[in-house]
Image (cartoon, rainbow, N blue to C red; front, side, top):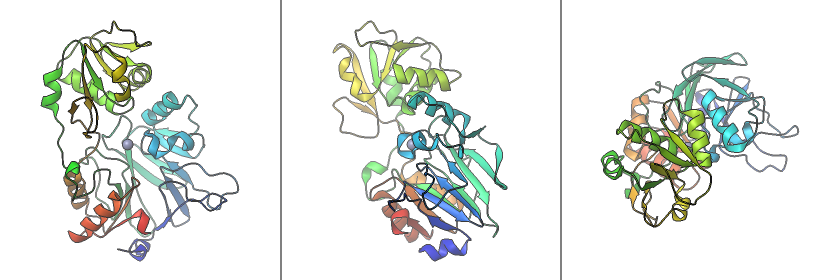
Length: 326
Ligand SMILES: [Zn+2]
């Protein structure tokens, strides 16, 4: 698939650039008289293209909300704005919405859909003047709430069909087996840590959960039903209940604790329990098949996976391209 397939749908895929002509991250979609930027850094006054809006799909760092949040053209869910403020200790300057709402951006009706990747993570859909239904997903854990579309912009974090590590299921039973006192779980403070808290609560753990400072503030600030949490202010022992800290802090906890990492990777010193914020390659391909777009653009992450995913989609009859090809 080449750029003309997308152009025929009334859309141009553009990259925002700086005055020095270097690309800003991710992508912008130009249609009719509008430019919607997706997960990129904010431009400055003399940059060649100024978008109508900076759509921020979620608050993970590699989606650049840290920069876009400082523009009054930023648009993200209430929870994503809150997460960005807690993570980066700055005031969010843009607009927010409740996930599921339809909002007006310069005369375009944009509908928002949960992707279940992190708290606040959200996909955006709208139609252009040619009637093309556009869907931008960001990272996706569960695609069941996403609408059918003609042009899909999506991710391939685990999108390499030839890589066995891109096939997985969450090991909920494995997590349930280790639940107890004197147990520490390694989980990134935003995303994985809240997933861990919600899985522990769902598995019946009602006691205290102790968390590192950032994990604690994000969980308290974003989750209504997190149960009893304690903030770990210093790594000096005496932790209450189960402990959740970033993987690199597990070594600061007493050697007597049982330690695990919630991850899809296998290169940690501690035993891994496979809990992911993402769909595997089978899930990604099924999502595209379900949504039935005429064209798919894989815009994330960096590296070779978007191209591998696009090649595979083309082989199974779904026209697709990676951002690096355009
Ligand atoms: Zn993410």
